[in-house]
Image 1 (tube, rainbow, N blue to C red):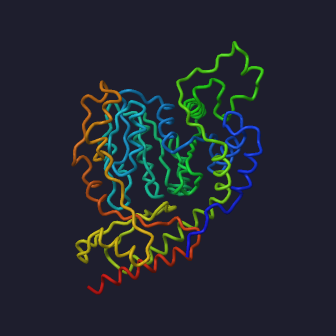
Image 2: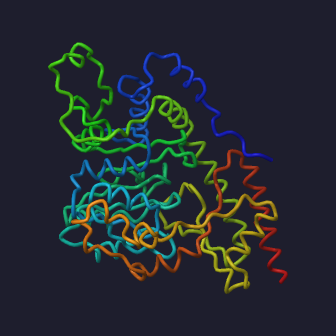
Image 3: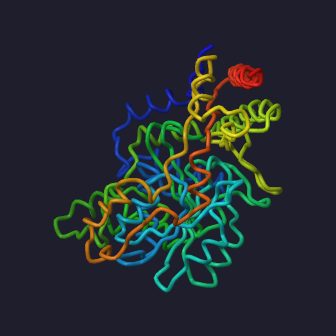
Length: 403
């Protein structure tokens, strides 16, 4: 049984409309504008700004918040490298906080320990679809006058103590990359209730055009003004992070079905979680009371080495041989990646990073749990297929119980 197409809504219909339109660019088209308004409405915020990736969004958010050379930005030790690289692109210094061993998310107590006079922002990550503990992080931000940028690349419609994740920090970042809940190949979104941040994010992602506003990304609305030779266009240093109209149209069609897409991931994860209750060495990511997890993937701690004498690699191989979709490992702890550990990043701004160095042991919990994490696929478009793969996992568990 093959995984059905994810694009079962209005994707093709909307793409045809883009092809037949006069503008394929976000500078003059309407699809970005429509997507942004729909996204903001769905999350109950004032502003949404579409961009070409969930990395661009992080960088633009940092720049919009005024983060610059020598400022420190705290992010969790277990997350994608992009939290670090976005910080470095802003010429700021990545600071790593340890994680909770059961949720794998950033530990607010370690965040508190890592705050210095140079700290300017915190990027808490909703890992695998589970929001981090945001209340104490927001309290720290208020106490120390810090900006909080929620990284929700893997988290859509999850809730934290009754509130929608993404509406708690000063800004929130989303990804529309191919594997995400909403996917259009590549893309991203920033949401915020702050008009200043929304306008700056848009300008930073749109070449710094001065007529870009918090709610408007089109710059060619008045051709008489825009094409006048005396018109001055740019008042902010910006990059080209604009989302193509084709991608915006696909993302809009996905957004229209987002509840169904999220529900399928949750249902798929549940099949696997039920099976894991038959053994003591596959321990799913803990979901605290009052939280919801929308399961970009199902993160699990594997303790099979000591429980059944089977290595991480051996268990994965058996699952695949039995017909499983594969098991994915967690990314390396960020500061142990060669780019960070070998200080390659220092070339970007040597006078800022001259004394910045990271060594093993910085975040011991993250370093301990990361090699044990298994990620099980939840991106099924038919619950029956997820059920089949969960049965494969049960077969694999029983296979090793006979040893």
